[in-house]
Image (cartoon, rainbow, N blue to C red; front, side, top):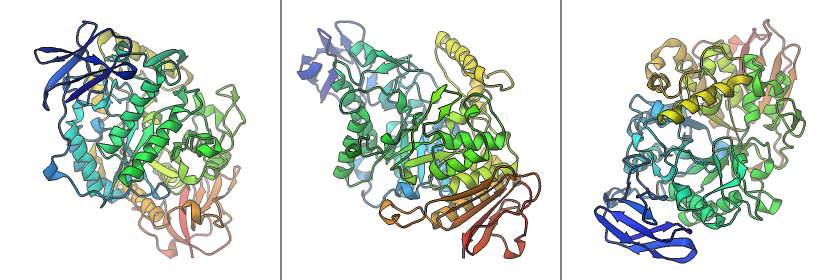
Length: 583
């Protein structure tokens, strides 16, 4: 077996394998290598210049945690259990409905096996893609995963690498694609040994979470190779169908070919090699269409990006919150803009930022924007981790769900949203004592721009994590069951009328939005579906768009079953949402 590690500044590198110290031989571009007899299950470390052993930067398995030994990993799937590849094909993004989950809090067990038991629920709901929050090994026994340090090694608290591979295969067998959230803008501080091996980081740029990764300085070719190899590993070895790239606005790359473009090219090549369509979805705070523009148009060639403006406009309108970044959003007009364009800010001045923000989304297709009313960031980065179910009544939850799921964009749901889960999703960690104290203090300061009530739960306390676990028994309660049925019916309606692919949309009308900010009503037409919202405190006569429209859902109809035509009314009741399809 070939052991290889990049350590360009080391004078010697030894492999520590059980009781043996084996010198590695220098190779090209700063690598050290040796062909050593080893078998799956053996533990090892590397020693640089005679120092104490460190985990392998490319370790595939860290069963003893981020400070422990690396372990040689065997086959993820035994040959006798290898599925016949080709029977599963992920639906394209224009038909996608994404469900984001955190493995540790999705089920009481907090494991891949536990999550696998809930796949029938996701199939019944009707989503098409499962998106896992980050899995790269991080310190301690619990966390969100955005402080991962062993990018190639799945967090051992959720199960073994083979159990992760089994989960992905089970999703595919159920007809679900699987996406993975990866973090390539920084690494966590605890257990981060990359800097000991080589110039993985740079002090020329700063991120809000730690040292920036060296994507464009000396030795950056091998740093880029490290990150791109990591992305390809998840897609090839574990058979993920795509990656969500965390906070790409904090990826600093100023060479002629941006690292995101290089990553996009590599993933596209892998997809051709495997005969699979693999996707890259970026989280970005820039409202910049270049992320999804092709390289020929000066872009990076990613498949889609998150649109935070959609969330912020919806949240501001329905909750009335105006603190922090919600100060930039004004009401129903911004909801209409979000439904029409995805971006609200297209170059106008942002009060919150104190500068202009964004640019027009020219050349951006609707399926290249992922939108949500709730996600891990917007819930977990609140002081109390409140979901919308704690901030809105049933009529508000149904309205937000309808606007999100029937928008022309790719909708994303967060675990438990579909039944209005009452459990919070808090920020939780398990750092060593001093780092944990600093994190807790930083969280309190971070919320200074918001007037949220109550003390910030200590991320380090086990109870903070335990409170964040979903309570699946809620699904049997009438209120939660009613909301779940509303979501299920909306998803079925959306899937019956998928967005048109690019080659079919030349003559297709875009979304049509009409609203009256004073009367608080809005109508929205897309793909033969009409959504009518009356958010006034009194009944309103809402002008209907031209055409014949058949009422199929209304938010005040109990269990949200398809409604009888006799229920149609001349004036919409206060705070209701009606859904029609073209006759």
